Amino acid sequence: MNGFCLNSAKTYLGKNVNLHLKDGAVIVNVHLVRFHSGIGRNNKQLEYHLSNHKPELIPLKSVAYAKILNLPS
Image 1: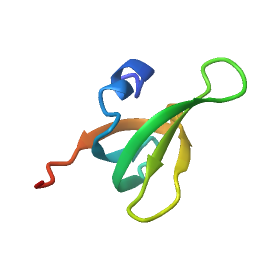
Image 2: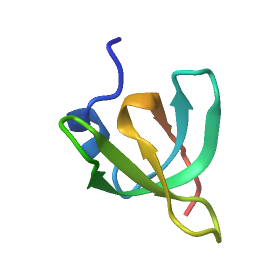
Image 3: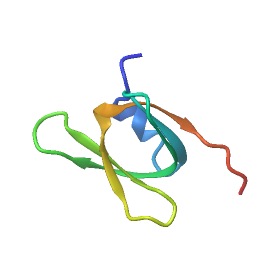
Image 4: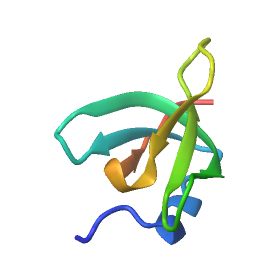
């Protein structure tokens, strides 16, 4: 797996996921909102919300993969 690219990340927008980072950390139960362009080429950032917190940004290239959560409605 080469990493988390922009095309695969688009399928997770609007969903609750666990973000697994390349350094081994996991950001649990976040809601992916949208992308932001960073400065320079291929420097996209992903905006996510934790429950009841302000939005956070993370560089897309530091995310290894995402797992969709099956939360009951």
